[in-house]
Image 1: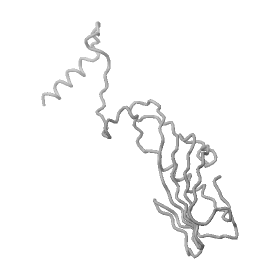
Image 2: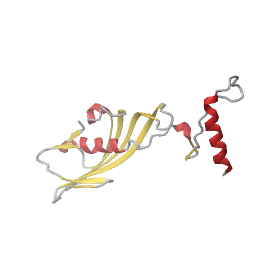
Image 3: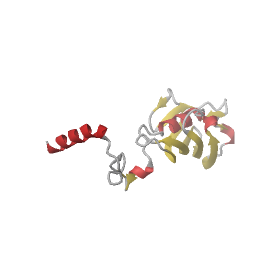
Image 4: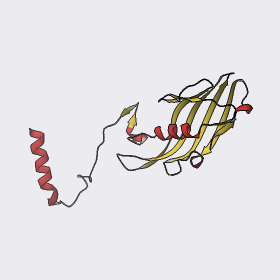
Length: 168
């Protein structure tokens, strides 16, 4: 749980750096292992703006080769707590929530959890398949023809079909 006491946040700009385990954010069953959170607070009389930059250490499985690899997933989010907010809004870049100073607890666990989970790529590709920001061509080899001493006749039909397709 990531929460702060409203009265302990100083007025104006302030920063906080947190290193939390995935379990603290409620993402213990995911590929995320730990999360580094950089928070920038901007507290005014009638609102509190929290800018979050997250770096999540993750162990992913490549969709192309099924090799596991470690990476850091970067993301950012902003939460604004406002006294006169009539309704709460959630968007991709940030959230507007009603500020209730009497409760004195500001909890941003839900927003951080969602931001971390949304940073996990849909298609996971090992870094060795990316060169200069471009995805490289995938080439699969099924043995070395030069060193194959034995001929396997099961592949003859496929080789013949491949040659016919290449001619057309």
